[in-house]
Length: 114
Image (cartoon, rainbow, N blue to C red; front, side, top):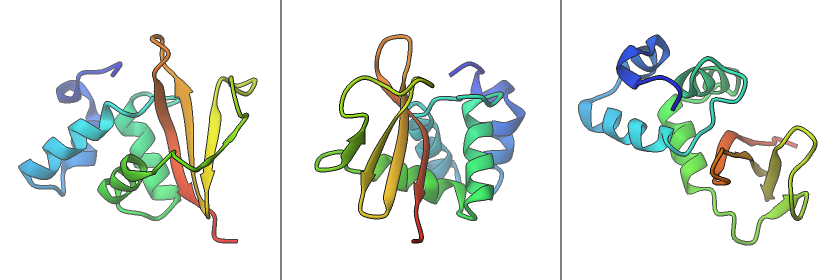
């Protein structure tokens, strides 16, 4: 993560309604995410959770549990021009981007209500 959780005001905001065990769970899940165009990973989570009207820990859990196996990947190999790829399975999607080590990190998770 770009910022240490203790010095990130977004991390403090993200954790304010949770127990210590839930905060530990949040810290674990944050390692799977990319900050993308946000100030921090916690900022990314807060914004996406607010826009998708979902509780942040629930968003983190759903993204963590998204099963890429059997999901349609777009593009099938490599990445789009913006450096990301989308996994789709049913009405769920997971957008990922490789980090500097080539490990795919989550940019966002969502559900299409079509």
